[in-house]
Length: 211
Image 1: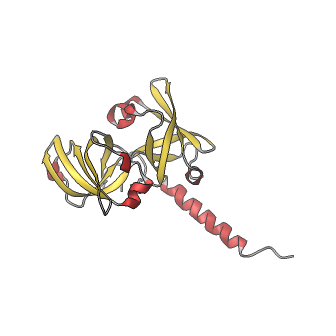
Image 2: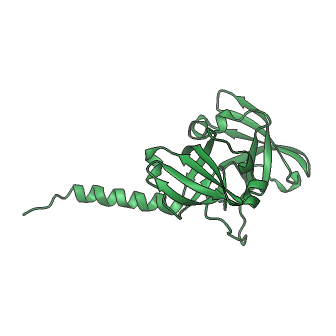
Image 3: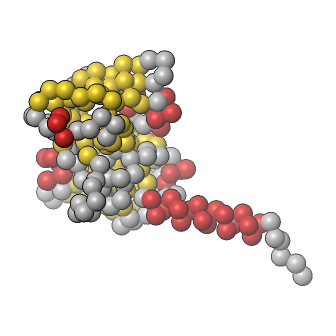
């Protein structure tokens, strides 16, 4: 599990497509001695398991494997060398939950369709598929490229978020441009509420009203 609070900005060193999926080597500033093989690290929101590691603190790297299923739902397949990505280590028991509960299981992608300053912050507008927009609500939580954010407004398949200066400086969001594709994970609560609602509606449809 994660919180959506980015703890490092890494860099894609290699991204190879193979028979079983994708293999990535990612540079980071973590101490490699603290990274266990098999550990989960959220890479721009995607929960991936460490398969190898090396380097030293401040100049470390780790590798991960991603299936074609993961690549089909995320922006990972388009990550080339030197691509900067948000990183977060898995939360530990007792850690402060400063963002919201994030699983690292990406639901799809959203595209930036608007970008404008809002005081000292930056307002970004996203377009998302109708299948995902039903889960997004104003003032609700959402994880975009692994960052826990609050939804400002929702209009059809579009929604907006505001990014404060600290977030722009400590994540990749300061580099965001219109047309960029980002990973999106809907709020866990919204996912289950929608599922229960669908089940309720399906149950009611099997018992038609009688006179």
